[in-house]
Length: 268
Image (tube, rainbow, N blue to C red; front, side):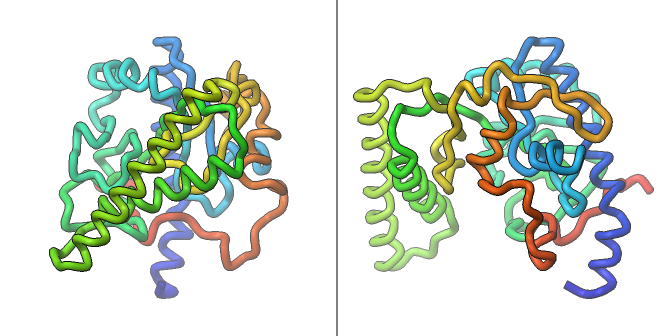
């Protein structure tokens, strides 16, 4: 990345963060009005606990929500989001690169490291919404193997393919692997029950993370950038699941965001 671009991103980062904060405030308003549970997740929760707001170099916001609550949230967004925001899903935009819900801003522009410009989906600043589901009462090692393998197979199957004997063999191999891992998942649910743990839907859980459900619910107020939002019941346990020693700062060379370029306000 050039020095000029690095300087541009650094000088405009706070503007981008504040626009994302405004999106989060709209999400909070809708969730509060409709009694929908959500909570700060990932780097956003880490920022709230360690920095009282954004991690200084972060350029996105992550929240989580029960998968079963997403239809109600989507319905409310259709009529209650301001005109410059919209809910982006694989249903509203089938070309979306990742199966993650986002509330996007139409009046900004963002390019991430893996963006695909052959696919026509919106690319404004956003807040990520990760759907969460109950997990079976199994070991974390089992979940790391099943979820990690499932995500890898799923990513390969959903990537662009050029037809050849090799690609057909890969599709057959990884398709069979994904089906077998999904069968293992359903067997674990049937044999061990579910509800003791909570985490991302299987195709979003490449690291095989899971949280004790009592560390998530009931959600509790948490301060972020001078505002009150919802966080998990036990942020310390939740963050240890994600990062272990989460209060330790990463080395300077790893302190960067997800974007390679953004324009916080296209109207300027």
